[in-house]
Amino acid sequence: MVDELGIVSGPIVRPGIRTPGEADHGFRWPGAVAAGPGSGVVFAVLGPLEVWRGPGERVRIDQRKKRALLLTLLLHAGRWTSVEEMRLALWQDDAPRSAFGNIKTYLSELRHTLPTAAGDPAVPASIRAVSPRATVLRRPAGPGRIESRPGEYRLVVEPDEIDIVRFEQAAARGCVAARAGMPAQAAELLEQALGWWRGNAFDELPAEVGGAESLRLEEARWTAREALIDARIALGEHDQVLPALRALTVEYPTRERLWAQLLVALERSGRRAEALHEYRDLYQRLVTELGIEPGAELRRVHQQVLDPDRGWSRSSAKRPSSERPGTPAPLNRQ
Image 1 (tube, rainbow, N blue to C red):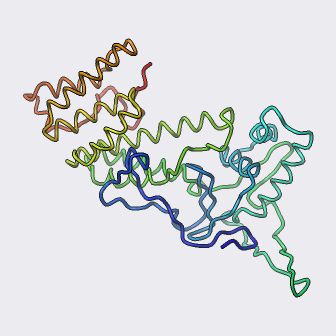
Image 2 (cartoon, rainbow, N blue to C red):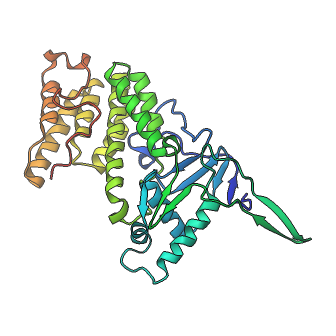
């Protein structure tokens, strides 16, 4: 149901926590718990743009230009954004003569639509009846969430009102738990972090506007996925992670960290010969198709699988000490 303020009422339905392969592979981690927005305002950009006033209250923003404008402001959340940046996001190199006037109109409409910022006095909209069959909505006036100065605008938003921050904070806590030797807590936090993702970040913006941030966030997403696999392997859930790992190595064949994790999961599931076969096949493909050999980490894992006397099955699947924990692995070597 949509009211006159553009609020979609009803329960928040989120997709739940997905595996490192996520919905693409139809696999859920055991005991996954959905990470809903909870209380308060949430601007969700890790997928199609969504704005939540609170549980069960989604703010409806349908017009494509207004969505792109709000995403541009969220891309620079809390910082000033020039009108020229907005024009580029909305029209690229084909802006109409009315572009700047249109931008002002869209900003005015967004001011009336977006939830009130924290600390601002609540100014409820009022309804004034003008006839038995018609009403006129009086909207609150003032800058609301969008502040302005000559040639620039800024979205007033608290850090925890953006799903990016919630994802990054949960992922960071998960990596800290993993380094502290608490894989169960790490897995729970990393699942919460990945639960904020519903698609590609800032996908509704042109690449020249949101591309760099989108790539940064996607690599952070990969880091969380791979850390979650490490945590599940540390918990002894080798058989559970294998289906997702197999699907991911097929879809992303040059991401060597996944191959290293696949070898670990196979060996610890008692399938050492299969792990060695996978490595031989990958080695052959890399050499013949790309003209390169496997990287240092993958070679190290292969040697540990080859040599049972190293006590590999009882050791942790950790990265080399030269790699800084929590950073993306150097992959996709082409």
